[in-house]
Image 1 (cartoon, rainbow, N blue to C red):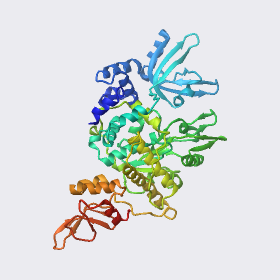
Image 2 (cartoon, helix red, strand yellow):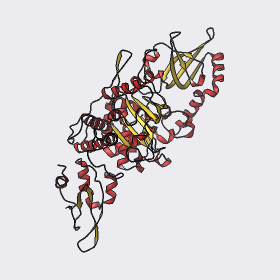
Image 3 (spheres, rainbow, N blue to C red):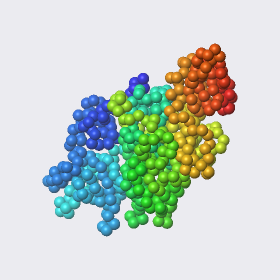
Image 4 (cartoon, rainbow, N blue to C red):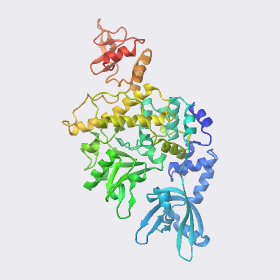
Length: 528
């Protein structure tokens, strides 16, 4: 089991995930809790230590007067809280706002936003506050963010060698709080796709689906490098660059920017859309006579009850039906394939401490994973770029040591093509002349892992070989077929009008046996 391997090869970086799910910790983000639990030893006894620490140092805004009184009497206090720094142009100073102090500002060193740019938008950490009685002011003397630093990826890569791919995928999902035992192979890959923006720069994705499926759960709880915008108005100053304060916006500050509840986000400023499209295409944007670059990945999330295209009908004015914007999206995740978050979906066993995992993903982000790909003809450059980004991201997650088999690369490329094709279907709906349908849409719900339970086990090796060689999943599984003598039989699968038949079943199609060569089948399907 991967749990035993994890405890052996990741000493000091593993924590029981059930500990972080204790209700006493629900007031603070997951990465904060696991950081503290790991520092306290990562054992069940750590719960009491961290609980006591939070009781002493994370008090909340309802105790702000008591905190002020302690500062007044003792002149010093150590808190755990979220620090947000704002720029005061009138005084030429930075002002820190801490929920535990309410609206009472604290002073910070001029160099703090340079050292930790995230404080301009809020960062969690340990703060040492000092009160200077003669001047009537509070000062942040020291700030230590809850963010692991990693000098080398080598231990992480070497540890990966102890796992099989299946064990490693289960371990990753368990580390982010998901129970792999209740997920199909297809669902595991989809959840990993949700993590892809953390390891791949400038990977822009969209997910539209039902409520309560945890769209923001992974990214919000996994990394302090991810920032969530939940509805409201967005402006060029907030997103890109504030010309008044001369401070970078969210895009150049964070690695992942998540637009949650996208249907309730207002994109009223026409200039923001042109800047957004320019950035999504090139990784650069111009603002106030300056050109800045960023590697932030953008994630657009929204709710819809309808799984059929066009899913993007729920987008707000400004983005809806804008094919130039959609064409810059690298993949549309099938939101209706994700289960609602239930207690059974939450993992209880050992996994990597979240801030350590976040640090490893941050180290993987700038690396180039560029295997040889054999892609079908007729793709645009944006299609090809999207597939390469998906393959790179998923390989970084599954094979950080770069020891991948070629057949796995081909399967991941097919998955990337599927996610990009979903974007193309949306564009084709709005502008069929510019984006004519390229191929019949696959019937919803049938994927490789959904097919295997429907097949005789004797045929599993043959169909697994087809999957590993990059064949797309069939458009239909077994179908009832009348035999020569009136009896009914079943086919194996169908790709469009090309059907595979098992031994002993007559009809229009290609008869195969369990030992039939996969190459023969691929030739019949026109895929070789």
